Length: 263
Image (cartoon, rainbow, N blue to C red):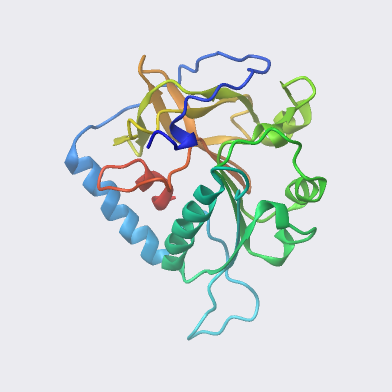
């Protein structure tokens, strides 16, 4: 557990507006019954479909429609590269509930046009990296109209000017939110559908975001710090989604991973 980089209290230089808090009002219901209801909703959602998963592809038949084609990119470099392999495998298992045809590949192996060859894509950002995002992937993210889900850290590679560590105005204008910083402070719970879900003590940190245009960016779940301040946890901006930590780390009946699974 001590070797897990996601539990390591990393520090990232804060960009413009760093350290701000959001006073988003939330209602919570603590306790097992509410979490159980979310779990039931998750099962129903998994049986029916997910908000992340997409219209059927062309060429379907009335009896045996093919599942969606999904690309899962993951980090696999450096000392902790094995984490990306594990988390992406767990995500593939989850996507199996939708009978998705999943292609997993390391981020470094991304080829131009890969996004257009799939119905949706996920990036499992499990290993800290501050190098610029490959232009091929950045251009494809900018252009795609299909669901793209960024999970975990490293969004600064796309959302910031890494020469100044300041938010890119173009990113904020396109998506309606900005990345403030990574916080290694303890964030005790995620609030989803008025239900408070646990966030593990060994997985303290959170990518902190600020909504700048509510007409573009919708907060689907929030995460509370120890002061009770609610930060966006899952954000949807059109086809682009971000998740403020790595929900594939662990699962339980009251775990915040239920919010991600339900969506």
